[in-house]
Image (tube, rainbow, N blue to C red; front, side):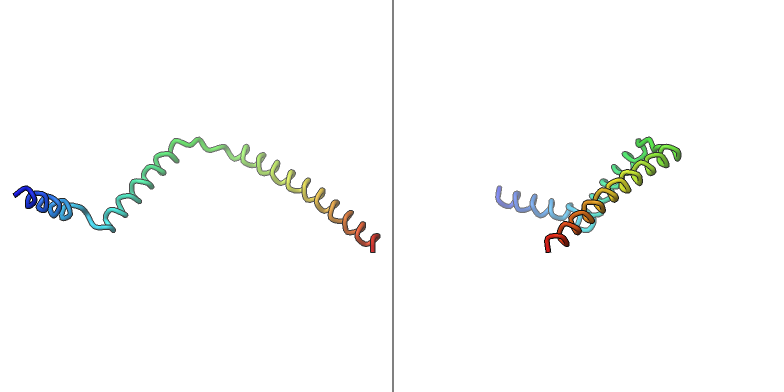
Length: 83
């Protein structure tokens, strides 16, 4: 008698459990709604600040471009002298 009740409970729980696609969609909805709510809390920088930071990034990249190019040129000349 007890075994029958356990089997019936398992079958009832399987029937009430949504299929894989429904569970996957609910999981995706939960993750994206959490992401959207977090993005609403973000304070975005103004245009001027973004422009200044972009200028700094470009300046640093150009600085290291010059350094790497100089090192490359120097090592190339050293190799030519060694030959």
